[in-house]
Amino acid sequence: MSTLSFFGREVPVIYDVDCVVVGGGTGGAATAISALEENISTLVVEKTISLGGTQTNSLVSPMMPTHVKTQRINVLITERLNKENVKTNDGTTACSWFNVESLNYVLEQLITERGGSILYDANFIDCVKEHGKITHIIVNTCNGLAAISGKTFVDATADAVLSRSAGVEVVSGNKDGENQQISFRFEMGGIDIPELRTFILSQNETFCKIENPDFFEIAMVPGKGHVLEPYFREALANDDLQEDDLRYFQAFTQPGKPTVMSFNCPHIPGITKTTDPKLRSEAVVKGRQMIRRLAAFLPKYIPGFQNAFLLKEANQLGIRESYRIVGQYVLTEQDYVDRARFQDGIARGDWYIDVHSVTKESVNEAKFSRGEYYEIPYRSLITFEVENLVVVGRHISSTFLMQASLRIQPTVRDMGQAAGMACAYSIKNNMALNTLNGAHLKQQLQMVEEF
Image 1 (cartoon, rainbow, N blue to C red):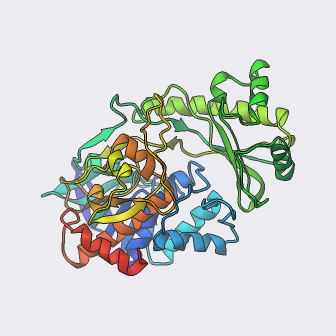
Image 2 (tube, rainbow, N blue to C red):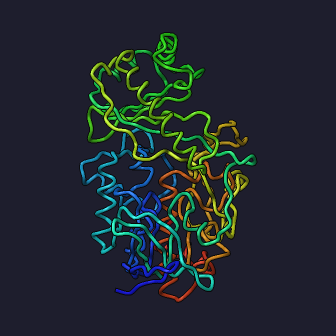
Image 3 (cartoon, rainbow, N blue to C red):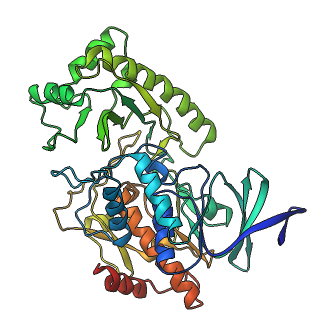
């Protein structure tokens, strides 16, 4: 086995592949599948033992809807979930529903069936860069430090960890440096969903419009007229809840889990810096306390929850935004307003500018009508500083507000489709990723996907 000298230590090189994907989350998994479909050797380096990132480890389900035609990898994942007897369509909304265990398994199978490799439980440490190119990354494994050699590298870390270590310029937060709010999701089991559904609908709730009885959603935002608010207020008066617990409440059923709901809450108060490791740890402690209060409140106050119990907490926080690279093109909210088109537009977005901001920052924009969209240029995925690096995920090159639209799962998966194809094109044509003409890539996507 070859070795690499790293700060005076000889580190074993355990992989040498065409494409190294750092981060097996929403974008990373899609990139890997795409690259493998282009017949290049691919490795996913994942710090946990579960693919899917925020989808699985942060319990972010269902997938928010898009009305644009998604690309092949997105469709492939949904089709495989359906084969796993997981209903992904509620018949009413454009959401794609899943449970996290099924999605994790499906992503793993789609990668390994195509000959891809996955290195779990491996934490990225640093990269080795020569003449503007990354040659190796260093990871910490159960056997200590190891090196991985590659021809192309994909930063799918969500926090731009690989990009920052390679010297790529980054920004974070809004104009005041404040990031979007953190969530800490959880699941409860033992819920009588039919009783809960009957109760909610009997109160003339207008929020949930899903007609299929296998799918259900509840929510409570103060001052929005939701029927659950009086129950939260009563619990607050009885000291069963605290004011922060009422900030935002939402829960979804889980396909294949008939008594389970996944909760898109609590929102952690007072944490304005998601890039601070101390504050992230503080958010975990605060969030866990809030989860326990909510899990005790629901059986006591809400019909259908009488026998419910806390099933599990997310394995990681729901971080909506942290670092963003400064790439060859910075996508802005004006591009959203203009429904921008680009010669190198490799993905489409139509989600609204969904800012969960501590300071309630927003933009005056009209939501898209069905069929309207903006394009994401390939230049927002590549950097000036590194030849063989492409970036996929919420941390591509954009403004704070624009990031709040492009970060949803179907859009990120489509970025991954393009990134995997770009890595293959780069290798087969001996061309740097950051000089590759994205117009060729867009044309290739149109040919393959009728995109």
